Length: 409
Image (cartoon, rainbow, N blue to C red; front, side, top):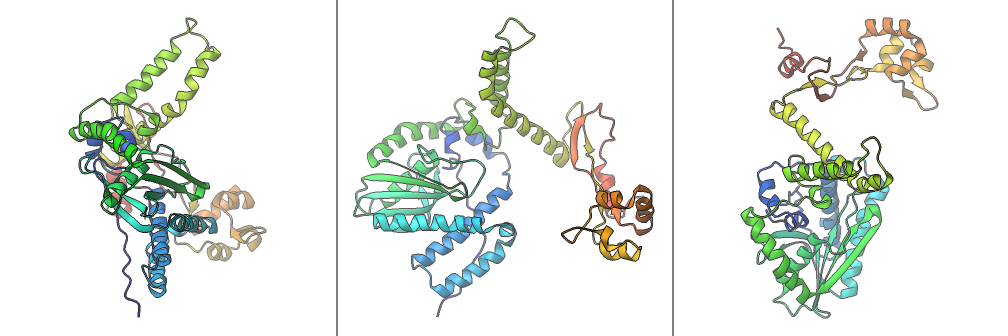
């Protein structure tokens, strides 16, 4: 009889010198300690990936005969319940993406005749203080002397490539150190599977070369990073997910200096030449990403932490009219004498929006209907950070909260 399956959402712990941020701290060594004091930002994309990893792990453990069929089915049902919010909008292609990752792991295990460790904790602290990570699938093939780390990336926005990937190399390094006492490891391989982008990338190097990289590149950078020393070195790739990206002085200075260089090189201040445009174009994405991050940071500080930015205020953005929540719109409209033809949009039987019904009935009849039925309300607009010169009134967060709970005087 199968044992009871316990399924829970587990948040992976992260080292200060984590593999996932190594691309950054190896190049920009002070960033590791700067990030340490800043809060993590969760995202729907991260939750999506967590769900995908959970289903993939369960499936692999069943195929590798680490759990019985009964345990797999019970675990699968429990996992679907736990991750119902994350998977609510998954299509067949998303579930197929999980399957394609599982198929790749099993195919590689067969090719290498390898033992497979799922969700393997790998430790590379020999070269980076406190350094560890989790390899989604770690393969060890004594017959070929190959250690292989496989990483599932479930995102479908930013592609992640395997060639020279620092995170993947550290996972492989940790795998090499973990399995080094089993037999002589001749070479290491790593793969990144990003199934929703149809990508499978692979890279490899000899075990000797990987150790040399760890000694000459990782260890010196890790020592500086651990001590919070070194020079801030902004890069497009390194800054993308850095928690300090919005307020980093080095990044701001670099963007401003590049702009000054490119805009001041031509003695004619009126127009830009095409060679100036050519110099500026490669930097635009980085500039816009920095500007967006800085604006988001400023808004969050004022909105969520009551910070004050001189010359700026928080206001409510424009909000569109909507049907009042909790109201049975078709029933109320029918009771008010509105025909089904006017209520529903053809050919699909969906209720018209407020704007659509107003256009259908006419402004005056609709205004009268709204006044008698109380069906329409205007929700609060999204908070926006604007200059003090903006004519809109500043938000009154205390007053809004009191009104929402019926406590206003």
